[in-house]
Length: 76
Image: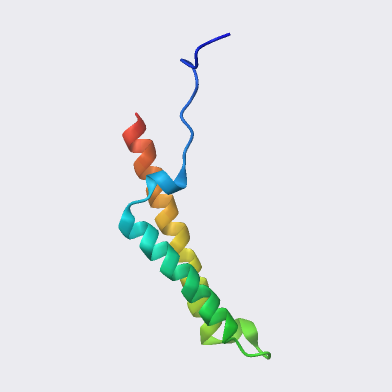
């Protein structure tokens, strides 16, 4: 049995995010729910609330991708 010398480090999103990124993600997730709750029952996908929610979801994904890329650059 080895002593863990050959193990590859695993990416952990919560430790890779900065305080500002964590705060932005937390606020954005709340705003997604806020906008989705205000979508009308008709033409949901055409409403501006739906578009805002999708923009916020994309913003969160971009922040997470940036954190992963930063972690990968620091790893090697």
